[in-house]
Length: 257
Length: 358
Image 1 (spheres, rainbow over the protein chains, first blue to last red):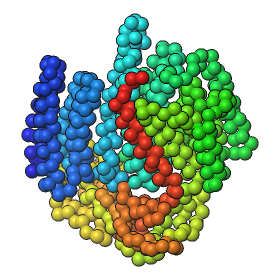
Image 2: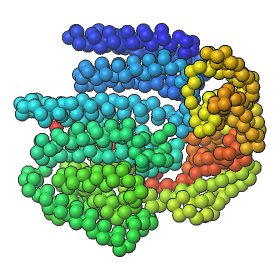
Image 3: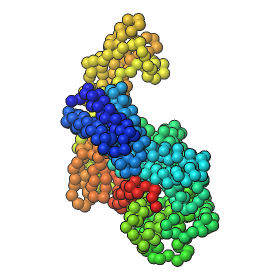
Image 4: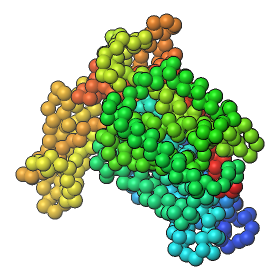
């Protein structure tokens, strides 16, 4: 077993997962999608286990190995979230992002030997990134819904508001999990769970924005003003994710590699 | 708004005024006394603050104190915190972290949090568990990180192989202090990735893409005390030109070698990147037993209330480095901070599970 066999396992898992997503939309009973997605997970997990045995250490040392876990956890957590909240689109999204990671692993095999720098060799790396990817999905969906609510009729806004709250709470749960795991990781790697690194600061800004939304909603402020916090929060989230490296302030950040 | 009075819309102006007044007072203090120095809340001052916080949270508050625990104030404080963090995120040199306005906002946030948590705790129902975990957990974490950090010490210590060191450079003050722990460096060990061969522009030294040249490297030399080297065979797809020879990135004692392809470009070797580095150490304490172990990135060694981190090494010599640099961290408030993190973690699971339901 080695990376050479990955394509067969990956193809099988992807076919099962995508059929599972289709089954989710086609059938009322969850039975088929449960079965297909679980079967895909078993196929994918078998590859990880066999690779682990072949490598004689947990596959966590290279970029390619890291992506393997993203593909796996995204589908698991995406589906678990579906089981709780019935957001079918989230399963489709998780499967799609998972497929992107699989494709990168297939198309750029050099990442299987390009090892990670020492600070990234941590068990926190994969869960830290996975929950953030899911947080982006929840907050992205909340943003779309908030914009529809802001520009649509008041009846539409009334219909959407509960879903928006729900998406923000779940998204915030993922954001909090991400920032806390980051803190534990930072403690192990750099000696401090918080050091006002630029990426940390922006992650805090993002969390504050969504906390502001949640607390404003409870405080009975104007719904229009409150709803605007969501798209603004999403812009801040995108700056945290992609923009920070381009800020002049990012010089010397521990998150820029 | 489950258990709070209505008519808040009218009152938030008052809260906004209070917060702004405190921030302005902080700015004035900043101008008069200079930046906030966390040393003033060192133990026992932080313990006194903690006691005041806990008493304030436990007692049914009078109307003035209750005002500091309202939801309107939370909203305004979160906004203030957001704005201050935003300035930090855009201008890290702004010194906000060590400023009086930030310190006082932090203090108000802690007060607000502890009063909110206290009010819920006094009328606790099981369905409030998530709320309590999140608010009390955040209070514990923010208190330990803010007030507790005043008691923490962070030092860099450079130790040569086979030698013992007990002096460390205080990261906060830059002074050299004698520490209650000493480190004997038995061995520093480092693995490097074998460096890549790249085509570079001779004048600028930049790596450039070259689609015409096929580069094959073999006879890799990778021994201790020698610079990595590879025997390179380069051939041009279009012209059929062929060159071969040794290429090396050089090191502290050996010069680099390149293979010229044209007048403008050559094959060179990049510098090796670290794969892992670790130090085998024995830690001796003034009091108590000594402890041996291996320290590497992401794997610190805990000795009493000290944590010892692999920080750096002689970058010029890489794997032949004769010394290792450690970061020593002493944080008596670490366990409360972890408790806060743990509570928040469970709290975020409840956020996920309950969603936006009231």
